[in-house]
Length: 259
Image (cartoon, rainbow, N blue to C red):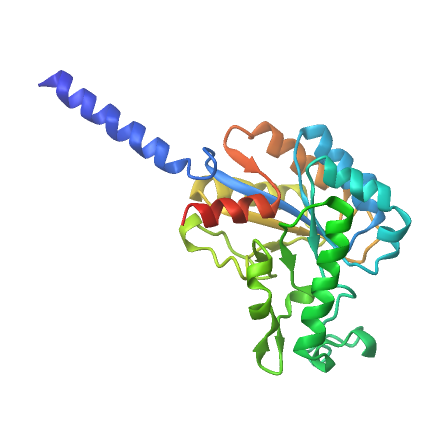
């Protein structure tokens, strides 16, 4: 009787433990995303990720000067396993929203047509495929905007991407993720302690945690210090038995295949 009861308890414990490891046999998934194709991504972020054996997602603006001037380095990063995600041709944002006085008339999404928006994103896909040879990637909404005159332009693009990253913040369970608007945590001068606490919460809750970075040690008014970023990477490395760190395209495909 005692042996049978003990076996039952062990089986229940094992099943519970296995149930917690739903993220590619890890307790949680962490995705590191970097927007706008900056020099510091090539100079600071990618070397730190490579040193730890991690791969990130870099959302590329097709007209970026950094893309044009350092194209071989972006191609090398893609060949090394980093995702080059689509961040549109010119990063159009809706200037009609509050706090958007910085948006130029040429990149005011509220003045775009659906046809123009979709075509520019498709052109960016073509460019990215020419760089990395890949046909699967994710998209990130510039400024988190996806509506033009009440119509979601991504509806025409959904089948062309593994998923799309938005800008709302939440921890997401694998069975409750909207792949058309994946949540993330926007990092702007946050401390290493803040980011590490997010990681711990993701582990505890068995969630997907997506970070959104711009500058890493400078170059952008939205920034995280190089030291804080490196502390985060080191912590992820320390906890890698519990954390699946992967590009968003891989996580999105994993979620879709396990629906």
